[in-house]
Amino acid sequence: MKHLIKFILFFLAIQLSHTQSDKRDYDEELRYQNGAINSLKTEINQLRSKIKTAESRERSASSRISSIDEEISLTAKLIQSLKNEEEKTRKKIFQLKSSLLKKEQELESLRMRYKDRVVNSYLKGRLTDLERVFSSTTWRQAMYRTHYLKIISDIEKKMTKKIERLLIDISKQKLELEAALRDNLNLKRDKEKEMSSYRNMRINRAKELNRIRTDKKALSSYVNEKEAGVQQLESIIKQVLEDKARFQREARIRQQQEALKTKSFKSLAGQLPWPAEGRIIAKFGRQWNPKLKTTTENPGIDIKGQPGSAIRTVLGGVVTTITYIRGYGTTIIVDHGGGFYTVYSHVTNIQATVDSEIRNGDVIAYMGDSGSINGSKLHFEIWGKGQKLDPEKWLRKK
Image 1 (cartoon, rainbow, N blue to C red):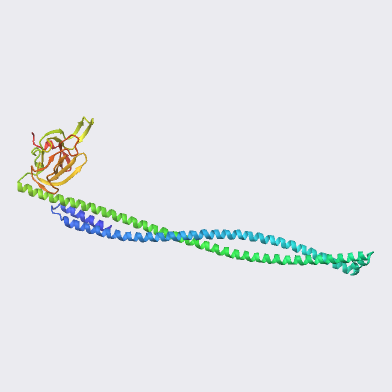
Image 2: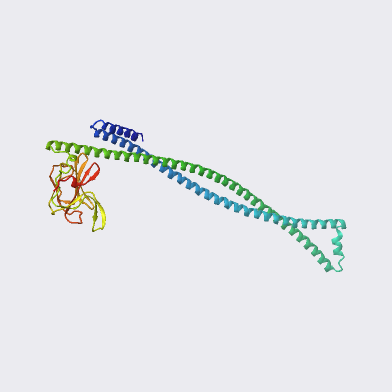
C-alpha cells in the first residue's frame, strides 16, 4: 500500500496548494494516479499468481493426505485381520496342546501297562503265560489262550504305534502353527510400524496444508487490500476528472459571460427569464397532493403549458447531462458556473447535446409529457451550491 499512501500525500499536497493558487495541473494528477493504479495492479497480478500456486500446492497436499488416509485405513484393516488370525491360531495351538497332552497321557498309560506286564513277567517268570497255556484242560482251550495273548500283544503294539504317529502329526502341526503365529506377529509388528509412520506423515502433511492455507489466506487478504487501494484511487481519479470537467466548463462559461457581457448566475436573483410559457401548477417545497392525499416535497416548480411549446435556457452555460429519469422523464441539466445548475424535465424533441455551449434564451427542447402523469408540462429546478432553490425567487415576476 506504499504507493497508495504516497499518492494520497501527494493528492493532499495538491489540494492544499489549491487553497493558495487557482491553478491546478489535472493532467499531472491523473498521470500520477494512473501510475499508482498500474503499480497496484501489477502487485495484484503477482499476488494472484502466488495464490494460484498456493491453490495448486493445497490441492496436492490434500490429495497426499487423502492417499495417506486410504493407506491408514487399509493398514488398520490388515492389522485387525492379523489380530483375528492370531487369535484363531492361538486357539488352534491351545487345542493342539490339549490334544497332544491327552495323547501323551494315553501313550504313557500304554507304556505303563506294557511296563507292568514286563515287570510282572520278570518277577513271576516268563513261564506265567506258558503256565496259563499248559494249565489248559484241553488242547482247544490252550490254542484259544495262545491266540488271545497274541491278539492283546498286537493290539497294544498297534495302539502304541498309532499314538506315536498322532504325537508326531500333532507336534508337526503345532510347530507349523507356531511358525505361522511368529510370521503373523512379525507382519503385524511391521504393519503397526507402517501405521505409526503413516500417522506421523499425515500429521506433517496436515501441518503443511495448514501453512499453505494460512499463506493463501494472507495473500488473499493482501489482494483485497490492494484492490481496495485501486478502488480508492479510481474514486479519486473520477473526482479529479469531474473537477477537471467542471473547471473547463467554468472557464468556458466565464469566457461566454465575458464575451456577451452577462452577469454571473448568483447576481441574477429575481431577474431570470421564464423557461416556458404557462402557469405554475405545483410550487416549490412541501405541497398537499389531493390525488395522493398526502404531503409531498417538490424540489422545483411545475409549469403547465401547450404541448410542443419551446423550452428555453434561463441563462447561458454548458449542457452537462441529457438523460431519462423515472418520474421526471427526459431531463436536461445545464451548468451555469459558480456552482449553479438548472434542470428541465418532461421535455421532448431535444435541441442540445451534452457538453454543448448554450446562450441565454436558446431553445433546448419542447414541452412534452415524458414521464408525466399530468399531461404536458415542464418541471424546472435551480441548484445552487449543492442546495435546491425556489425557482420563483430567481425568475422575473409576471
